[in-house]
Image (tube, rainbow, N blue to C red; front, top):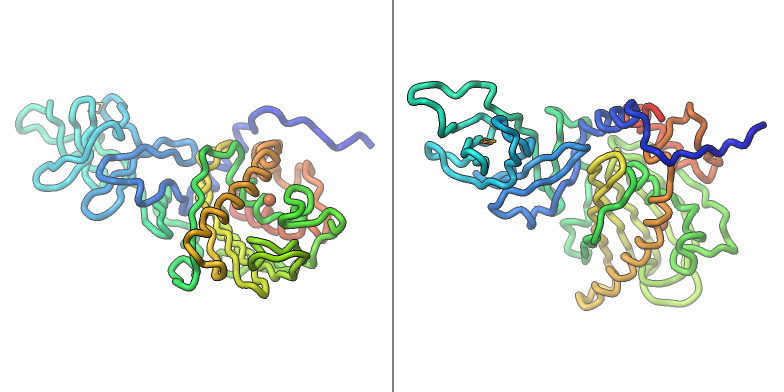
Length: 350
Ligand code: FES
Ligand SMILES: [Fe+2]
C-alpha cells in the first residue's frame, strides 16, 4: 500500500473555503474587546469580510466596512447626528447610515429627491458578553453563547491574555488543538505532562445542548496551573466544554482549587484566527500573582503555536478524505468535535 502522507502546502479548494465561511456564518463570533471600541468606528474582519463596528445609541452596530456609493471604508469616517439621530458617516462624500443600515443622508442629492433604497447597507447583529463584542452574520444564530459561570463569580480571579499577533491557522484547528490532551507530554513536558507516561486518559465524551463535553482524570506535574505550587505530581479532573464551534472552556479541578482556561476564537478567515483568552482561578488569588500566571500561560501558548500553525491542510479535512489518522480511543474527543463540525456543515471538502 502506498504511504498515506500527502503534501498540502497550498490553499484549500475554493469549495472547502466557501464551505468553511458559510458553515461558520450562523454563529456568534468574538471580534473585539468591548473596552477597545470607543466612539470612533473600528474595522474588524470576520470570515473574510471587512466589517465596521460603531458604538452609538447605547449599542454596538455592525455593517460591511464598505460604502454603497464608491465603496470607501466606512471605518475611516465618524458618528454624526442626522435629523436628531446618530449615524455613521462615510469619510469620502459624507453619506450617512443609521442603526438599521438605512442611508439617512446623501449631501449631494438634489432638493426634494428621495434617498434610493439601493443606498442602504446591511446591518448585522452584535452583542456584548464576557468583555467582548460578538457578531453573527446571519439573522438567526444556530446556538446561543455558551455559559461561562466563572466570569461573574467573584470567588474567581480572572486575567486576560492578549496575544501580540493572530495565529496562522483555522479557528476549528485552534479549538481542536486546545481540546487535544494527548499532546501534553510532547509539547508541554514538565508543565502539563510527562513523556514517560504518554498513554491517553479514559475519556468520557457527550453532547449537552450546544456544547461538546469531555471529562477525564489525569496526573500532571504539580504547579501553577494545577492547584498551586508544589513538587511531584497531582491528580486532576478535567471537564472541557466546547461551545460549538468556536469557544472552549477547560475546567481543571485539583485538591488545590479550580483553574479554568477559556478561549473564544475569531475566524478572521480560513487561515487566520484571533484568540481571546481568559484564565480564571480560585486559589493563589493575590493580584500581584497575575503576571506570573499570564507569563506562564503565554509560555504554554508559544509552545503550541508553531505546531498548530504547521498543520496542513489549513482546514480540517473531512473524514471521507481519509487524510487524518485518528487513533481510538485516545483521539475520541477530537473525532467527536470534528464529527459535529461536519454535521453543522463547517467541514465539507478538502
Ligand atoms: S464613497 Fe462613501 S460617500 Fe462616497
Ligand atoms: Fe497545548
